[in-house]
Image (cartoon, rainbow, N blue to C red; front, side, top):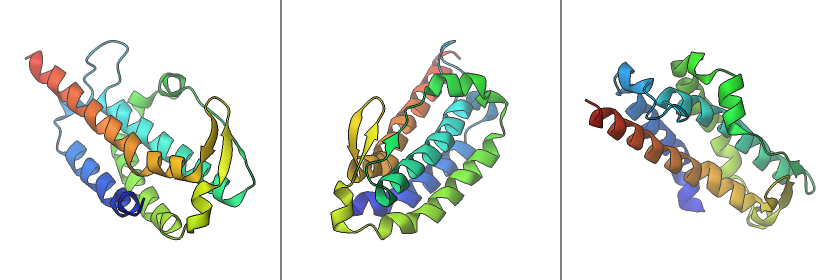
Length: 156
């Protein structure tokens, strides 16, 4: 877990650098009608960062809190992700991770096994949530961004 915490901020900083280097035409490209653009992926990452930070804080501070699920596709559609300012979301992702990193660093060993009840996935530990927030969720979307870029290049 220590390695994941150590990577938490630098991984997002690297991701943001990479996104900023992508040409605008690729940013808004959708490889399929139902797929997300890179722009929408960034806004999704922002929303999920808020959600995961809240979930982890709840599990650390409360006794077995309820952790609500959400429909990511409805959020993207109804909140009109593609119309939101992507740069503001990139800046906010870095700021949120800078602010949250100290919370991760001070988690005591015994607190990693604290739990919350997810409305769809059942019991989740602080460790499970932290692994998702620190590593797996961003990695998933780094791969998705690359697939979008590959699809964009293939259509030319």
